[in-house]
Length: 566
Image (cartoon, rainbow, N blue to C red; front, side, top):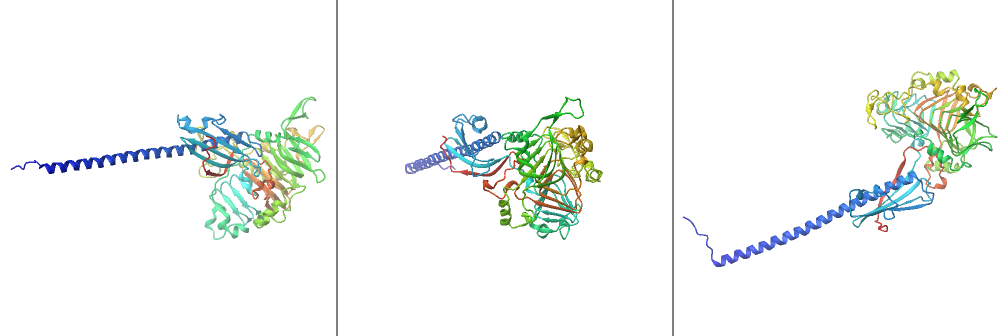
């Protein structure tokens, strides 16, 4: 049986009304959804524009930082660049390269505030996309002084202090393990890129630390394992330092007393060749200097010696000597008017240390930045050769090889002899630790160290007898023990210091270290280095020290959008 579907008229009208109401609801819902969708799309689009504006402002800031690096603005200057003026290249801005027609421009200002050191810049950049403006501000340091100078002793290798007669007053750091033995005194922080050890066993395996002093009493706060490795400055190219030296040759230079020997840079001086025919000329790019209390060696500003430098005696002034060859320290180097180091500034309270820095801002402070090696003592003496060159394991005859260091650049680690991928796409075990592009072997005494007559002939003012250079043993001695200054090399620091107590007042930085002292070794950090305790530029000692990274971002923040460049 089938039930018919016929409805009564009232029922049909009711159904139609229901359909109309439901249809209206659907229409309203659909309209709302379309409006919401449109708003959502517009909102999403605005967010995209907002983000693009930020990235474009960031790109403009990167361009400005590169501009400050390439052409440093003058102290106190303010330089403005914009896409609208055609002074800010579009190639550095993201959106136009993507064909984005909503790009409205970018603008940036580089300011060198007079209340900051003259290599610090304030960069304020803005960009607009479809009416959305973002503004960011960063403070950058161009060619910042390398952090290696924050330590009295820094080794770009295995650090090692063996002996209870070693005392360090300041912080020390190694770009790999730092090994202690026999209880040296460490009055400061210890940093190691890997382990802090005692005789190659990590200190956490011992109940007491293998060192005395402040670090031994506060191991938790002062001993840092696994610290980031610090980039060593690369002195392969001296062009920037030569340019700095030659900016003002009357103020940058080296004097003996009042006699200026080097005006800015010594790059190609000529003299009669002592071993050749009368008129032959030999280029002399090295220098021999001796200072006395009455006629000291005076160093001011940035000075470049392209060849070897042989030096000893009394020095004064403030500045950095860049040495293209080896630095031969023939005997003690002492300041004419240096600070009083009898109480190490790093062992005092922060206020007392800062007071010490302020009191000694005008006293002598000299740095030596050496592309070759730092060699102290008589390198021709059998005693020097025995201890500094031939000594088993640590002598220079046994170190320096770059051919199988592996990716970490440190000999004696697990990746030795394991090939790794280089930036140029090649695979090898070679690590170019000094950045010169040459695979070095262990140090060679005859070619890398010995002061031969041929080597001496290239050194201006080197003493001669009958036209021939005198033997180095007549000029240098192992009976030395005091070095005051900042000493840097990414090669060897090899020193025979035969006096009872060896004293370093300043900094010693190297890659391979063979410092052989007699009875006691005292290192005292010079807290004026890098003037890192002072924000006042009037108390900033700008030595022109080597830089590691090209740029350092000190601060970064987003500001209220600035649309004045639209």
